[in-house]
Image 1 (cartoon, rainbow, N blue to C red):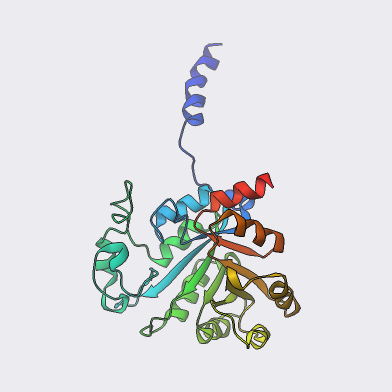
Image 2 (image 1 turned 60 degrees about the horizontal axis):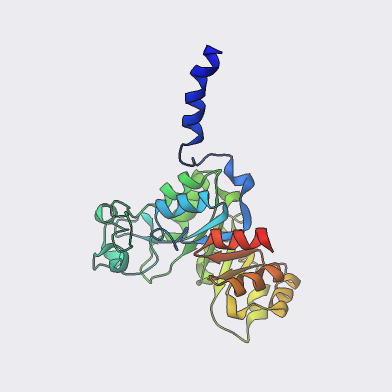
Length: 268
């Protein structure tokens, strides 16, 4: 009895501890759900905090954007100019990794995020390994030196090939990725209707078509399937469109609110 009483406080402490991110979470994640720039609806986009939240939300994937700094470090940033999220009025190709790391990447967002920093891709992969897959978007800002190669090197160094998709608007970057490692899943991002979509789907340089959701209907999905391409859709934040994309059974729904999407999946 005394032994039981001694153990009880320990068990209670464990029970009331904040949720922990573990290496076993990947198996229970929702593979169809991708957290856009992490869980960016509730946390600062493209930060370790947003990717940690995506893991806790049980998203199957987290989407992120990568660019090179002036000293050639692959870091996570959507905009060419870093001002919107850091307050520093410099372009990615003009700022060093050390300067960017010193900036707050969360002060712009309401909440206690002033200590949140801009991460390297390496840090995100280390966090994600075994916990969540990544959709890594290569941003072509016109000043990239070795973005595809450096990204592939990081993926290979962390044995992360089977846990990611590399996407881009730039088909040439995807061709470079496939040339460097044909086992890496790649995806072409499309934002507008085109008369050449069938030609795009024939390419062997990518395995996925990642399309803006207004482009995606039953015919689009069927066309992609005929060319053995998966369909990802972005960025889906409203309930009605979430339900429509679930009905189309697309491979990935990219959203700022993965918790909202998962709730719909569990109730409908």
